[in-house]
Length: 599
Image 1: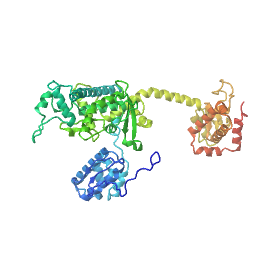
Image 2 (image 1 turned 45 degrees about the vertical axis):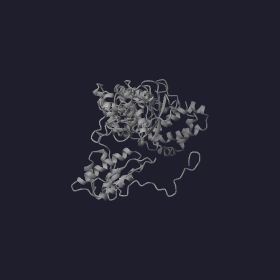
Image 3 (image 1 turned 90 degrees about the vertical axis):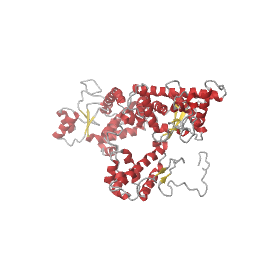
Image 4 (image 1 turned 135 degrees about the horizontal axis):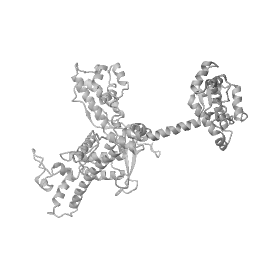
């Protein structure tokens, strides 16, 4: 039902979901759960027997039922094509699923992680030997040298700032170039430029470029060069420069991706699929100060969809960075709309020579990775000094580590997978961690100072030596502890005249409840039943007194005893320990709680 209680619309009678596989079983046409086509994957030209290929393509279709990403299909389909190719070239050739032995599979996959991923597909195919299937189902990790390697290559704050500044400069130059040419185009369309004026011919050429995504060209069979008129008008600057008068270059799209990752720590897969904001919280679409960006992170499963609020508070803010990226790519979206290929994708630009067919988004494949590499190459060629090996994963890790809070993941993941793996964060935190541990240790000593020496069995010299060693007391004191001559209701007192709660050299005069906070108190295993029963008795007392009385008289003792039991016993053992207290033990505890044993 819908949220208002109306029944959802049912499909028409006789409806059947379109088959994922073509009739020959060699063409895969997957659809996401939202009904979006996820590409067409054709294995008809792959080598190998038809039945062999058909079984594995069907296994790919079965494995992909829960996938919602075209990139996932692309990676697995590419690996499966390679599998068919190398299976046919093997000696002897692998022509049936029954010939996929553990030895052949291990040799073929080696240490290549992307090949190992295909195991989830192959083991679904009928006829795969049971030994091979078991081997494939056994979890295997990437080699230690590779696992998490990129995440450890985080940039310092200074490097991250340098990268952000350089990326912002590239985006700024691109949007200013496009804005200047768009202004000429708008003036030409508005008739504000007279024929014969210097910008009139430029406006005419830009009008064609804006409508078609390409420049006016000769249309002969052997020549698609731009016309001489275009060359003269645009100053013989070359095809690429002319095409990008209105559209972003690949390196500028790469810079835009880098800028957004540095600001918001988004995954590259999230940015690929990111659309322009369709709603602005400040309700000012013409000049928004607040952008709501919807994100889609497939790896999060049911929680894959989220939204981020980016606020424009001037240069250097994430909202201003998004505004600049929107300006950089706006004309490309407008042209695609005129070409009948409307898109809401954020990152759109001209991806090379040619016509409007190369005016595309960067959602598919590794195009965006390539754009980031081209930006680095271009920036370095222009004299910008950048850190080595800039890639999306390291940028995201760095941004996560230095932002100081979780971005697009939960706090546990943020701390475990980003901050704890970052050397700079660990070094910067060392002093705070050491101070915190020292304070925690001091607090623990103040809270629970009583020690436990377990496994003391009888009044023997061996037991006394064990207590002396474990409790760090004199051997004579240890003999008196094991003989029971120093027992109190909760432990044994190693030094009655030098209590932590009184003046040195004077007899201890405080409640036995404070033994848990005294370094002279030494408990043995035979004391645990009374301590467990004491904790239960305090729990019962809690409901019999007012909250104010509990907080003033009993809460600290209850917490201290609970900490002692948590440290030295298990949850399951405590009821058994309390039940082991005999009648005299229980009477002693009640007398202590009733203050009949106080000095």
